[in-house]
Length: 606
Ligand SMILES: Nc1ncnc2c1ncn2[C@@H]1O[C@H](COP(=O)(O)OP(=O)(O)OP(=O)(O)O)[C@@H](O)[C@H]1O
Image: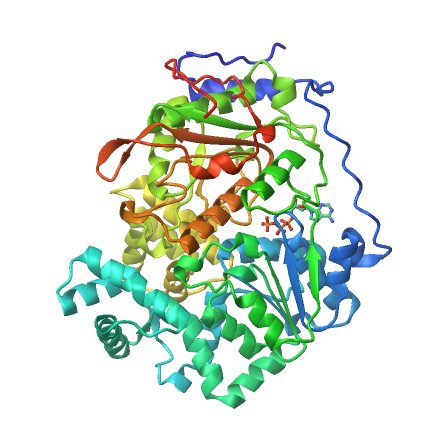
């Protein structure tokens, strides 16, 4: 069977055509060795001399997993932090006789907790330790001891729109201004700082309203839990006795409240923190890069372990990403492979069409047997292997349009809270009107049916998310509301299913894909400058780390794109390539792969 060929200027392919092409690829005989540059054979991970659970780890991972007491692990992208965390817990439970209920894993998002639980289940079966996001852990503590803070037991979580309306009304502000003020108040709460008199007045307004209405906000979940543990020594002691071992992932992103919560919960010997200072990307919302130094001060006896092997990415990607952050590139487990491609397009729309064309080329082009293969695996590339990353959610629109026109299935996940999604709001409102009685799952189905009239696609998405939450164990309407306030759409990003992933760079944290397009690499977008002002040095450094996170999501192929013109700040404006591109050494960059975009768009290198 001949390979499927997509040529420049080809008409948009229909979904049927894509499916046929896909079926054709799957029906191909096992491919012969591809005409790719031969990668240097990866050095096998050195044996660690251990058996049992730890046998699956390299020597440094195994040493860290078995180290007793407090521990600081600093590790780069793809170095197996998640693997270490899960194997450390499995080793404690299966081989050291620690009850699963005495172990706690803490991370940031539902997506991360879900992933941890899945991996832990494969090691431990159903005897799982507690796995929490900071918010869900804070909520458990607050629910159990609401009285300590004078909260009624049935307090609820108010979403942003409700709190914004309170501020707008009380202070006579526009909704936009009230929204910006909410963000500032949130950062003050996370960092434990005092604001200007006007900000403190706004804080007092919200606090009075929250007492009157018996609600808390998302930030209160962690800071409130800290207050509970601070103000009741007996309660603090009972939580410390409960967990003999605590492991915290993504430690580089903890803020003041989250650090204090870990500090309060951990006894002297129980806390293991794992993170990568070069992947710290949440300084803008109060994460404190000083957390590693602080840990070393608070737990002076804790050894520091470094994991350095990158098991994820080709040597080319590892070396280029290291150059971006000015670090030595060590720890490659693969040789240099496909060069990184930089594609320039005349407009943002042409950029999106260019991504489609390159994708078509990779998946069905003349070098099908070569490029359309996953490194190290005998299977063809599928849409699920591909991610398109961008700095701002608004950039997704052009890609959605281009993928729709090409009939390529995609899944876009927004970083917005679930509770703000119109479909979720409609279904939750419909749930309120249903008589209580039937199990929650049936109520959700009935509510979806009644909310569906206006926006079937939004209701379908809402149904999938709400049912997933019920599958996770949420069993009443109030808990369902809580979960929607705690989670974002991106928390449900599902890499299964044959769809391209459209994600912000922030939402891509922790994920990996064989093929990654990092788009919109223009000054102003990456690094992002709000309102046209140049970012200050700290913000610029954080933008650089964010790009580092984006580049290091790629396993095999990395394509960087930018446009020379884009609608920006209310007008179509000329754009210049991101200054960060100049920091990628030319030796790692190659020419565009030949997937010329439809409508004869021109691609150039830089
Ligand atoms: N010892 C090992 N041997 C082989 N593969 C490994 C080993 N450790 C990790 N990997 C693989 O490397 C990849 C990255 O691992 P993991 O997701 O745990 O990294 P990470 O450090 O959490 O990454 P990041 O911080 O970039 O999100 C995974 O595909 C994992 O299976």
